[in-house]
Length: 88
Image (cartoon, rainbow, N blue to C red; front, top):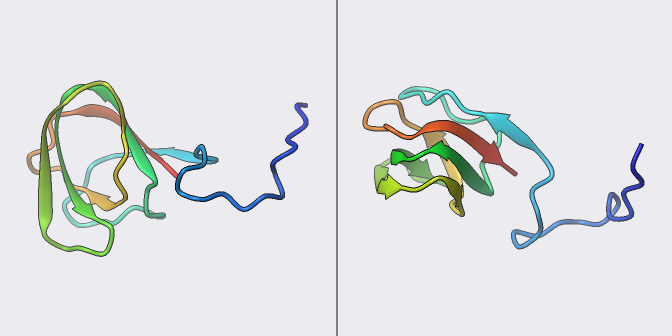
């Protein structure tokens, strides 16, 4: 087992994510935890509710990689990107 010398330190938004969850986009369900960022596994559009907002925002033509946005929900309607993972 690896020794984590940082496990007792409080992480800020600039710190690496400690947890992750595969996301199934939903028009009605919020994420369990607000994300620190999203990992996009296959490119496309991503429609989200940004942290604390209920109006959808569309990110168009998002490439594969980390999208550094804090979101409460990834909507199914309009989201064409795939293999989305929430990081926090």
